[in-house]
Amino acid sequence: MQQAEKLLFKGQADEALALFSKEAENGNGRAMYFLGFILEHGLGHTAQDEDKAAAWFDKGQKAGDALAILAAARWLGMDDRYHLLKDAFPKARAMAEDNDCFAKVELADMYLSGGIMINFEEGIHLLSQACAMGYWYALEKMGDLCQEGLLVDKNEARAFAFYSKAAAAGHDHYSEYQLGCAWYDGIGTAMDREKGLSLLKKAWKDGSSDAAYRLALIAENGIGVPPDEQKAALWYQRAAEMGNTLAKGALGYFYEKGLGGLPEDMEKARTLYKEAAEEGDDESQFRLEVLEKSGKDRI
Image 1: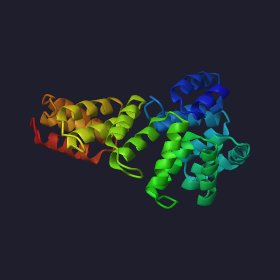
Image 2 (image 1 turned 90 degrees about the vertical axis):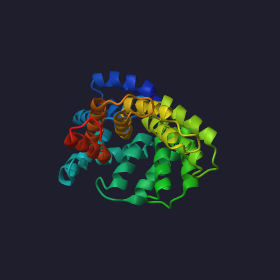
Image 3 (image 1 turned 30 degrees about the vertical axis):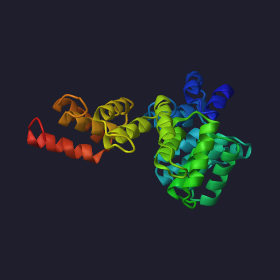
Image 4 (image 1 turned 45 degrees about the vertical axis):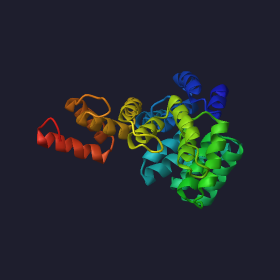
């Protein structure tokens, strides 16, 4: 377990996943928590899957792991949540005080989201402690808060600094994606589109479907480069294959209209629209309904 946790701390989620899986097979509740964590956030090349994550958190909480109990409680109502957490919460607090960075972050999430009680000050304090320990996930969370102006003053330069530290501390594709966008758009740093493209491509290779989708948008809309529908189609395909919902909808539109060198294919368009709609994309739902009502080959 120690080796697996060291790997995850360094952002090497793919390598950690294999070790956690073996430990989970042997009934280790903490390993079950980490499997849920990797699935919940889609770390490394693991596709994000909240249903599978919830299942692992549930297994972990049944095995008695305090962090798995905290994570499983997110899917419960407040009354059920309180009964589940009344014993696990003090254990998690003790773990955090013993410098368990994973416990610090899980507790921070609880405080910031109101899992038991809303305590923004304590949540930020715990997150800052995990950042000081060099935990890349905590650094990314702080970057998000600064970028969005949530609970802290909006500060894009500070967000860029946190994402940079996260990328240096670990190998997670999320910070690479955020840095790629920042460099490309000149947000929080000087604009450098060559560096931005390089980081976005690296993030895609490391498992980021969002990076592939962003590269598709850049190519389709000619953002800083000449418009290129064929490149856009290729990046939409790559992102869709990785499970990106918006990319599925965009690729469906390309098949519907025969764009980017793709053939007009209403059946593929319907399939992609349906998948994206089931995953919550309203535009794909609209286009699917129009296709079904028209009964024609094209809208």
